[in-house]
Image (cartoon, rainbow, N blue to C red; front, side):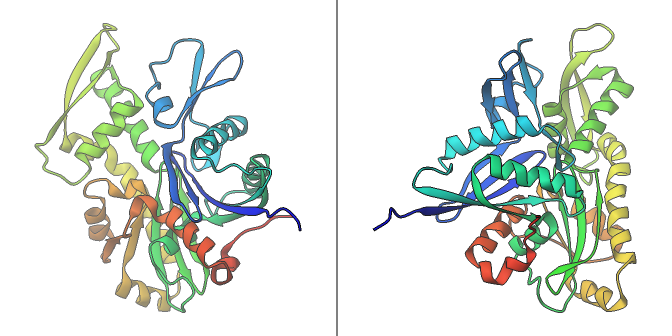
Length: 338
């Protein structure tokens, strides 16, 4: 009698801002920032996730703090592998002598075949025996509870850290989709630029994120937030108060880019699809969709009902979980490459 081999089924939402890991039978076992810190000389891992993120802008000269994904794709493959290996160790999801590993990793639908192969290589180098990809809007729609196989148009946008991707889905596939690099990270960069140009203050990524989350774009214009950074003139620490109205003006050009992507997606769809969307509306998913007032602004600009996915932060990983739990139903949405 042979030794039984157990198959671990692992889903990964490998995001620019956060990485989530799902294990069939255990649920979501990891939700950490996609950040790794390493010693410059040896490339030995110092930390990953939240602990590494806290080191951004604070690390000593001999430590590199890296965000290995940019705009929805892997920009530093070796650092991504090191980061995921550490995540897998922390959550005990590695393949072993008595187990094999099957993975599903999400990717933006518009990424090149080169980028898709890079993600598959990543899976195999982590020990996967079988590896599949799934496009982010498809996974997000499944996770949001949408019936992607019916003959009805469903409209969704997934706003992550690196990309915002809108898609119309019907009969199990993408009818139309558009993608932009304007998402959570780009908004943080714009807030940093705003403080440099307007106030001659340099703030960090984490401060910019905090401003964005706390003030939003449609809010009480008199609401204030204190930002802290370095005065570029004196070189000394400095705090500056910013109002919600100032932030709104800084971010609206970027928000309008997201609206443009939604408009272009709609413009390419047939009238029958428009009738479906007028009835069902637009579903918002992804962490970037939770910016205060974004739903109201999109509703005003498009004249459509706008609703949130039941769990916007986890739509993609929830979708991957549903694929694992009903593989015969969802196998057609998976991407394999020779």
